[in-house]
Amino acid sequence: MPHSESSGNSKTHYRFKHLACNSCRKRKLRCNGNRPLCKTCETTGRECDWEDTLRKTGPRRGYVKSLEARLAEVESLLENQKFTGSDQGQSRTVSDDDGLVAIEHDLHATLWDSYMPGYQPFGEAAETLTGDVMQHSTSPEQDTNMQSGKNTASWELAAVGLQEPLPSQEAIDELHQIFFEKIYPGAPIINKGRYLAAMNLPATSRLRPPVCLSYTIWCLAASMSENYNAVTEHFYHRARKYIDVDEMAGRGHGVVTLAHIQATAYLATFETRMLYFPRAWLSVGRAIRLCHMMNLHRLDGAGFDVKEMLPSAMDWAELEERRRVFWAVFVHDRYQSLASGWPSVIDERDIATNLPASEQEFITGKATRPSISLQVAMTPDGIKNLTLFAATAMIAAVVGRTLTHLHRKEIDDGSQEDPDSAFRRRHDYLDKVLLNTLEYLPTQLQIGSSLLNPTAVQLHINIQASTICLHQAAICKARSAPGNGFDLVESGMRCLGAAETMMTILRVVDAAIMAKAGPWLPFCLYLAARVFVQELSEPDPVDALKHSESLNLLMGMLRSMKARIPYTVTLLLQLERDIARFGTSNPIGHIVVPVGDITEVYSLKRATTA
Image (cartoon, rainbow, N blue to C red; front, side, top):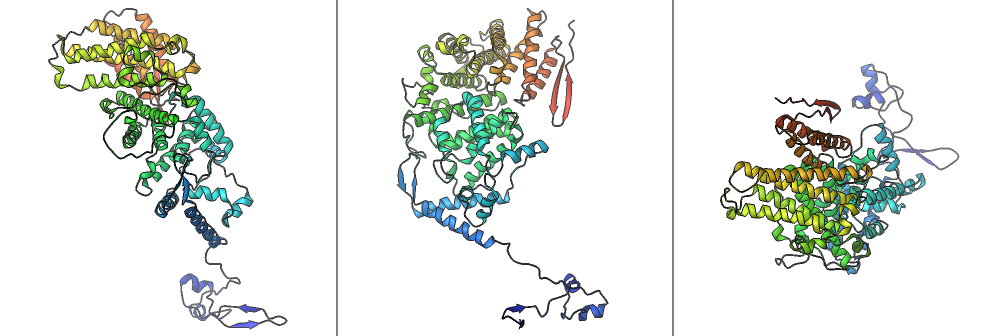
């Protein structure tokens, strides 16, 4: 390009000799650059206009520096990966290959997230709240420095695969408080002290909980808070996304951690409440497979000589945390099977992990008494030593055995007409376990001593619901084989007695305590309501007025739970079908069922008795 020098100084000014006019550039025609009228415009008779300034091309300002800073950050991470802490808190040497895998994980997560934009909640309120909660913690000056690689905190987030800002520290602290007050007592599978301490570690530390677990905890907490409810789905989608990111990184070993099982189990709890049954079922299945991969079902017994995916626990508290994670997944497996009718996955015969210790022992990290196995827990002496979590797991085992007892025909069952068949012996054994549980439970777990503990209240409701399930199975068997020794009247009275006991508990427990109960409470209430429906369908029902009041109370409680536990809607619809099928002459009124944005009012027809 030719140049000319201006008078008075030696500065050089460049100009393009063949700069095209706007008309030729727009039509992609050759232009000779003559001003004010080029040859092409003169020939075609078009207006020839020119731009006085050149358009800027190439990358935006600071882009190259940003790339150089990011490259330097990756090189720094690779250097730091050579010496890092292991899961036991001890230093170990990491090879260059391990460092490259870690960097591949980080970069893969970053690229994956760039192609998968984050879910945004709908509605003005949700957008406003999202802006407040998910705000940047950096100032404008820090954002400017980030382009030149000076913002260490932001680059730490990028290094672990985060493209969006985390919630503000104030929001995180509040969500953690909500979680440990309202969610954690029903599923105490995280060491609270260690989790909160690890959250203060740098984002790139391997001892810091994975971001999928944090988002899962925030999701559950937001669902229980009016202030953060609008971002619940946002947190939920983030949690699921980062679980998938960890699974797809490298060869998939990133999800083989205790924290990922905890995240998956808590996600299953949320999905069950929100009526995401297929997702909940699959999440429970994923958690079970991870437990099996890490041998969490054989923590206290000898098993097959298989590869150990987890290192040995560094202390008793970590061992107890692993036990709690397994039994929480076990409880999910049994109650998911009960609610859906699909078969459970965990086989009790493979379990060699003792039941959880008390919450106080878990907090202090010191065991004051030896743990017991599931088989011992079903004996009177074992029941006397049960903790709250252990009792919940034991009742879940009874539920699972009841389902297997009803739906799976064993080789030694014998004839259905035989009153001494294996089927009848299993029924009597399970019934005895339930009766012994009510009789021998420790004093602190008796219903009179635990009315202020929502988890203990849920335990007693689960016991009554298990009694109903067991004797409903006996009623079905008695009707299919009348000569098998089952007494229809006796089993019917046991079901009615369990339902009335459940109503007594509900009447004396404060509503605020019931609001903190687990996600399976509506299903237990449905089982009791169904017993009253069956009782009222009899030609001459006894205590019809009392049972009608109990049924109306249960229906009202189920309606009140729809907002907090949406799957309650399906139970109300099923009750409608039960009432129509049994022909109950009970004035129940109307059931308002929200379906999407449409509210349908299902009116229950009153059946008249002849």
